Length: 502
View (cartoon, rainbow, N blue to C red):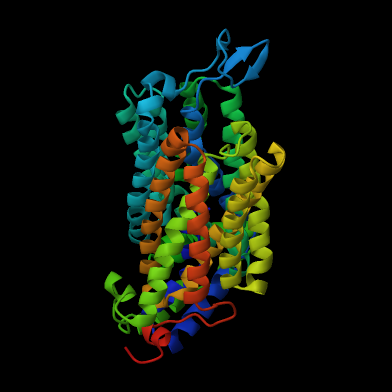
């Protein structure tokens, strides 16, 4: 799952942060009724959403492609396709590791390349998020698609590993602008009752992309052709400049009523509805009334300035990097418990589906606190059990145990975004999620070095034991330090969090 999803889910509340409470409700009702009157999830929304979801599958391929690009060359023995290293077997694959000699003492290069990807993602998270609010969702989505396609094509011919790493950083930078912005754009397309479904469907496309990557990597044994198979079909996304519409909600918020009217008319035409007359004048007058009634702005320092905010911020700064490190680490090295990389990787991706379903069904019943703390604690226990019993139980059981642990991490990863968004007040919610997302990238970078370097050098223990300890710590800290937010009204100000006027 990706970090900007819940920002999209809360977008209406974030927009309302700049208005007086009594006027906000009237504005939102009028604007929401305008959009829903044209169809909450009609034919227009369905087609547009499916179109913007397709690139998510390719983003997922780019995130994890290094796992297969750098894997040891497969060899053919006795007419079978196996990854073995016996003498006399014929090499039938060509990996980046073979080309740039990344094994042995040069194993650190593997980790560095993937870490550079996450550094690009870190920079892109802030840049794309800010630019999407300033110049529009569609423009950021389109230019990030162009950047990703360009970098992906150049990966095929990269002459050195460090140039390859820079190009990977380019694909990493584009990831938030495609995945995150696409989900936000999708959420803004539909009525409020469909927004949680949008996030679930987007995750399904991500899973499809991960499984597609494993299948392609199994049959395409040259890493350059694998990149070509991912990049060349992506050229079709250049047409999105003409077929994807800008978010009407964003256009209205920017008072670009003529452009918004074009989108609304297209929506009405596809959904067989009618755009209300003089809607722009009515919305415009209502917005003019509240434009001078803005609240004070808040910055990063406000996350730690007061006691309750500081407690919530520091706790999230533990949860996010730990959960992210485990999520990416267990995906990149899905075969850490043994077995075929292709089988374990696909199984790991499939485990995302029940995780998303479980989250959707139980998050409002059990609560955010129970779901996060319980799932990350379960993941830690399963990893510990796997380590202690690895030599005592059949190999298949050990692999299943790790796959269930990955599913538990996926649950905690999904819940974490909702929980964090609800823990912080409206006036600083975007800043809080953005800072947490930044801290989380350090967890992903650490996972890269563990998965691609330390595990090869020292064995699975350097992954299993730290992940176990950190998972249990994150569970305990979140349980003791954070309040439950289910069925609680969202806080608008820091004063509401602290219980006194700030």
